[in-house]
Image (cartoon, rainbow, N blue to C red; front, side):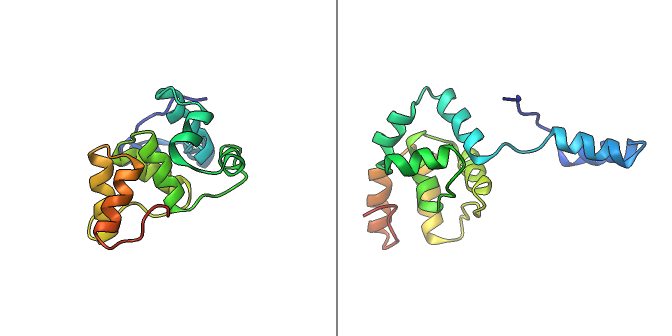
Length: 144
């Protein structure tokens, strides 16, 4: 797996302006492409020394569904992504990146439910604790 390269918007714009050909622009952009959801999830699991078995036990996600997500065969919804993120003790940036890679929107602090979720992520709450906070706030829990 390729190591991520961080580049700012202004640096990218400078690269585009200095490119001699359109092909250079495409080639440099392709080299910086985002990983897939399953690639990023594997990377997070590896970084935190979590096995698939650990993830299944921690999240309560159905075993076959979890493996289908890891294989890129299933597109998980927001609650599943959030359960994965909480189990891995992801940062808010990592959580939002997981959501985006799944084709979902970032957590938005002006939405009540998302504010609770942001708090949970920032304070490294467990999935169960997060569920309790959501229910206390009168919001939809991550699972029933």
